[in-house]
Length: 152
Image 1 (cartoon, rainbow, N blue to C red):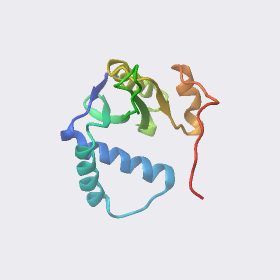
Image 2: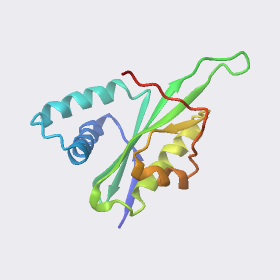
Image 3: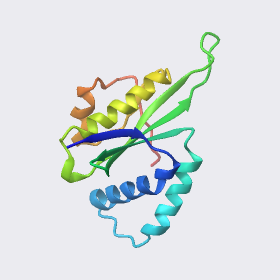
Image 4: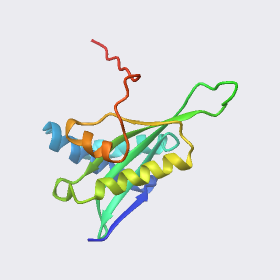
């Protein structure tokens, strides 16, 4: 199996949208019939957000089988560090038939390599319960200083 992971471009936006659609229909049982409209709106969203949401694609033998996103956010500057940025791993997905084959690790490796190139202060991830150990294997840790608020 030949796996290739690469930065995605705006030309890949509908493909990324197709993976997002597939994930939502598999994981939450969404049964909408508006797939084509979603792909169009997703492609427009991806094009509008390429400066802050960096997509990566995994391909096996020329077929797209996974994706991951690195969201990059500017942070409030300090007198000592005027260009602060952080990242968040989002929407890591590998088609079910190829999970646990190393593809997710390759995608995450590409995301974290990009985070290093961008000199991000830190990278976070909000994980499903199933994937917590996956992220811990590459160095993500629980941190008691991170708190989350959700509206009621």
